[in-house]
Length: 227
View 1 (cartoon, rainbow, N blue to C red):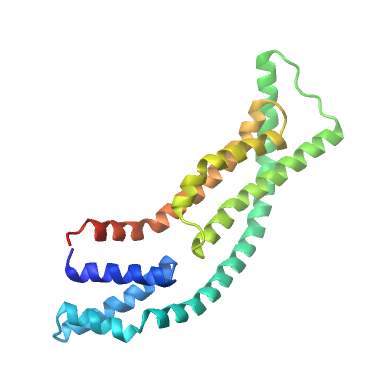
View 2: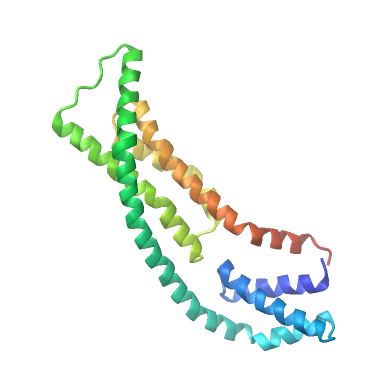
């Protein structure tokens, strides 16, 4: 990698250390810097002169941090409000999915499992069935909120993929506990709830990893380049 690319990578790290945290803000700043550098190089300046001039025109690290902190607050409010709106729709979608698809499948699997073991199927009392349906629908609807909450936190710079990867083993335990708490004692019904909950978390982590890929590649290239 050229000296210019190393200088831009180092400048980007300084911006991140000063408080400009989100990838979108850093990418926007870097795009402005690169445009200015390109224009100066076409005007006949060396890459080093063009970079130093572009940095000066952008302003000091502290001035940039203050300006972007205002933008970050507005940006956070936007993503939080959007997350709330999307979350309402996703909650209702989770309830519909659970009632029309998941509960019938869970009950059918439970009955087949009981017959395979030679036991009689569970005889539901009305209040027990209503309680079961309510618990499972609530758990599944809240589970559908996981991607919305996680990806909103990612967008505002609170959560990174590294955190989600480290938290995976704890999330598995939590989801197993919720499946045991919210469903019947037999394992098939518990798995029917556990698997979608865990899948939703994995989808959130995968999307976060995909969003962070460009930054990871940039950092790897900068670190692997010769000094």
